Amino acid sequence: MPNERGSKEQIEKTKACSPPVTGNTHATLTINSFEKGGDGGGPSECDNNYHSDSTSVVALSTGWYNGGSRCLNNIIIRGNDRSVTAMVVDECDSTMGCDKDHDYQPPCPNNIVDASKAVWEALGISDPDDVGSLEITWSDA
Image 1 (spheres, helix red, strand yellow):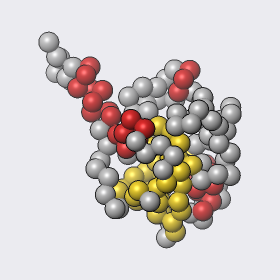
Image 2: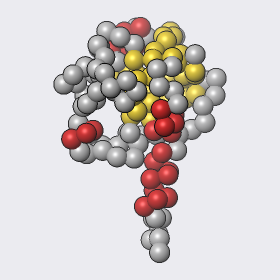
Image 3: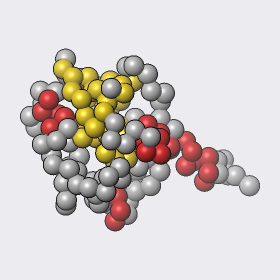
């Protein structure tokens, strides 16, 4: 019998739900290192590889990652009056976290594009750690 907050299944489904993807999907850009020993923990889900911080790659929240359907496809990110194309290589897990596989980080919100330093630099932000996050829009390329 579900409690007032809902069953575990309902909670997991809610966390996996991301806003619909449109030609101008609103999101929050965050910084991630996809290099070995970086913030992402293990290798990327899409290709089981690590990626240089100088390569434009991203992880998408669970709903947008959509079971890997966007793996190795490009998206266009718009922010700070600029745009950049980046390849989807990983999932920013919205359902699990706080364990070794997720580098002990909490679950990802459902509206995140977690990007390498190269993406931030292409958007004209040289030190993303100073900014923390950036409101952007994105679309499939």
